[in-house]
Structure formats: structure tokens, C-alpha cells
Image 1 (cartoon, helix red, strand yellow):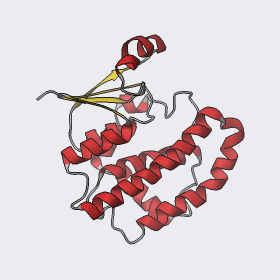
Image 2 (cartoon, one colour):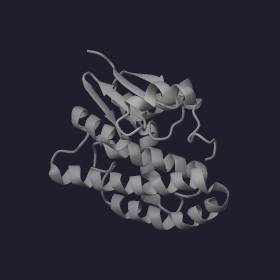
Image 3 (tube, one colour):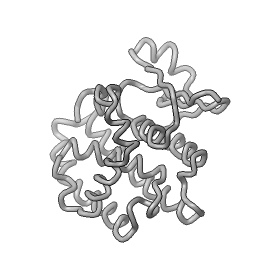
Image 4 (cartoon, helix red, strand yellow):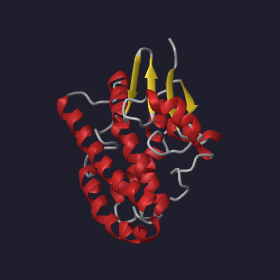
Length: 207
């Protein structure tokens, strides 16, 4: 069976949750660098359905949109919960992650110097929502078993901790969750690689 293929810029960005999911579930994959700009514009962008990456290929299946990839892999690897209720909870939290990620990305790329302070000031209200959702819920989003949304939430929290190191201090459940996912052997395996260590979080170097 051919390996899954992933293509993205050499940043963590929207591909890191996918990379971490694959490594943590012992799925071998190959990654192509879509940069630099000429390579992206001439060779990669035209083949992307929406002119965006990351891009994932699994046999005859080709996908763009990072959250679609996470859900595809979740169905393939049994990371979507045991029933419709669990799947809906995973979807709900993952959609909440997407909302906060969009706000974070907008600040990073469009308004970092003036926007960082206000973003950090508003962060507790956003994180409280996740704290409430995770209370009395077990080790992970769906209890004792990891799901696809855990990788996305963890990746976002990791970026936020880099932005503001004390941001989780007021949220004990979320902080314990972040540490728990961080210490999963597969997550540590991914983070110990030279590839991970060499990647900036964002393409403009701001974090």
C-alpha cells in the first residue's frame, strides 16, 4: 500500500495537526515542500481545488482543506468517536478551534504589532469556553480515547502558549489536557524530529 502524501509549506501552520495525528497513529507518510513561491505558483497551486494547501493524497483520494483532511483520517483510523453523539461533540469542538485559529491567524499575518495585545487580552474569554467543555469529560475530548479534534485543539493551544506562555494558567483542566496530549509518546516522537524542530509556527516568522 502506498504511503499517504502530504504537501505544504515548511511551517507548522495548518498541517501540523495532520502531521501529529499521522505520527501518533503510526501512519507512514511522505511530505513535499510546496515552496518557494515559484514552485507553489507554477507547480502546486493550479492542482489545488481551491488554490490552497495543505494537500493530501491517499491512493486515489486527493483532498485539500485541513479540517476535511482531519475528518477523513478520523474516519479511516477510528478517531471519530463511537457514535453520532461523540462525532458531533468532536465536530463542535473542532469548529470552535477553527474559529479561534482564524482570529489568531488574522492577527499574526495582518495586525501583529497592534493586534497582539488586544488578542491576548481577549484570550481568556475564548479559552474559558474550552475549559468548560473539557471539565469532567475525561482525559480527551471524547473521554479516554483520543479523537481527531484533540490534535487540532492541542496544536492551537501550543501556538497560543508560544504567543503568551501563561495563557493556560487560569484554566487547570485545559492546562492538564495540554500537558497530557504533549506527553503522548507519538506526539513526543513527532516533536523530537529535526523536521518539527526546524519549522516556524507561521510563515512570516511571527508567533
